[in-house]
Length: 220
Image 1: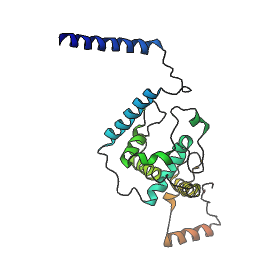
Image 2: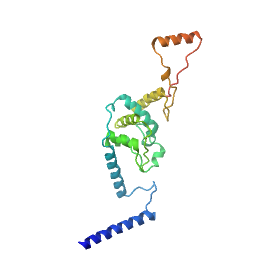
Image 3: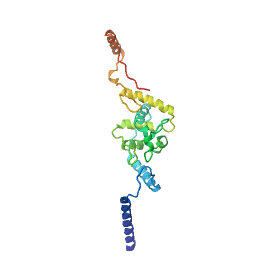
Image 4: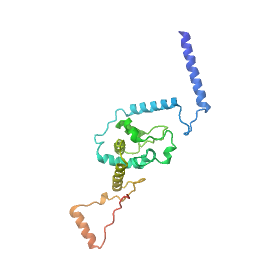
């Protein structure tokens, strides 16, 4: 028995020494142009999958996740921050995505792999050593809206995506948000008027020979 224990200890020590020599030797190629070994890929993918599953457990999914308004709001975030790397229906990835390793996945194919809670966790916390950033500086409402959009990607046509982008651009204009493909516009939410107030303002402006200031509209 003592001999067995001694042999196990010697083997463990030898493995530790060999690992230390390997790590410090610089032999392993970390270049993004060189794919991982099959064993490395297997280890990293299993660590990622199981970590996401464990850390996303217990996250409560909002009941309004399928609301059209949520999907439209999520389109704005996706088009501004995500499409550049992941692409979108009818929209190819940017060149920067081709230089990343691992390459950002096509979410239309991988969205069904994760639950709503897991997608939310990924968006909020990111994934180390993949190029996937965390969006923890964005509000949970915006992230859940992005989850709602991402879950619509499987089977989404380019025509529907274009329509959602157009709707989200109008939403961005009303709230004064801007970004790539989603230009900012004047925020008129504090200047809305209805009924008799609108008519009174119109009469006052006509009496002063003034014209209403045009409201900026998002470029389609």
